[in-house]
Image (cartoon, rainbow, N blue to C red; front, side, top):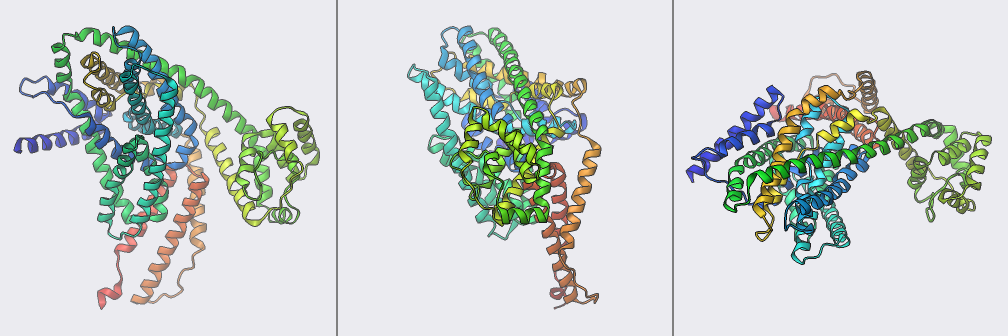
Length: 623
């Protein structure tokens, strides 16, 4: 027992030392821990270490992914969901299949199902690169994409691994069955994660003790993942969804003391768990090599296969990222063309006289507003805004009508009316429909329009070029999840020890090669940094918003120095801070400001509120 305690203490101290040294040297601490673990594993007095993969997959990954998703800005996740979904789902599937074909061809007697299983093992990337990229000051879009990808691709890979192993057991591998399994796993996990995330906030909002509140938060990832896994779904996706729900709603539901306690304690948990993963990953190398030698499988062939596999992961990732960025750039140019029309529409809606006319006269004739079939504008104005955001021609016609430019509207309407395709059919279908505006749906439409314009500013303000794409490719390194997933292979897997060694070498090689040179790649590629002038202007607008929100709260007129007057001023200051926080959260939901600027402002308000609360009530001190 004492030996275990000593080893545990030494491991924690090693993690702390690696973190401190990494911050000073600029080398990511996981790389230091992996190298240190590899060196220690070959010492003669160090026993062979083998960690049960279930401890990593079911015990360590859910809290790590939950913690990361809580801190992930929900607005950025929504905006980049297309790129995140492509990298974390489509790319993982493509990589698994292509690598599976390679493994089945190069490893005698392996078969396609086991090859795809190994391909799924080495496909997911790790979040190690995110910290390095953040410190380099690159575009927040790159950081958001890498963070979002690391949240979901582990779950995709593990679902594919489970399906491939099941297919290998029955000697039948069909992509249709794998697809159905994947869809079921994700849908059930999302439902469970959403339920747990909402219940988490409902319960914790009623718990006043910050320590107890944080203790409850430690159970949330497991409350989401365990039932999902019991139903055959992805526990990791459930934990991620619960974290996203918690992170987006917590500032409105939980007190600053509770959220500060959560942040500090979860940072500690995240540091220790992540450090343990990479340290044990390095320590396991000697045992993995020993098993390969015992099976007389040969280490050198595994090294060669792993090197080719690592090269293939980079090639496939680059081949996927290039068209993905081209698609994002095309969408960005389309959004940019929409900006003048949507801006004009927003100006008209914000004009009180124009808004009054809209309420009195109803919306413009629907032949220019191509709403989807079956959508009632009075019931779902968001769908109307979505059509405007998706089609510049329809948006232009709508704007022209509202802005009082009938000639331009007529030209656009005629072009849509005579064209073929879904837009023309939708236009003709809507010509007979006319619904009245109400204050509620007009306000909702304006809110949606602000969000669309904020999204356009976000995408066009930080376009992703080849420089950012190069970083996205090179930052896609493998990690400890690959090793844990490999060790979860059944004992009857053909050449299991060799497959585990290949997976380890791909992960370790990726970490050391890509992780060790990512800083150099950033200096060579020089991705476009954030615009300091734009950030300065954004902070100015944010301060104006805070000032306006604070001015709406009246301050006590009394200047007496009495306990009662102190209480009045304290109450007023707290109301002012909460009004400012509500204004910031509304701006966050609209996407008006960047996530980093908003996070800093919210942290300052939380600190002010905690400071005021700690001052107590002088009536209690004098009583």
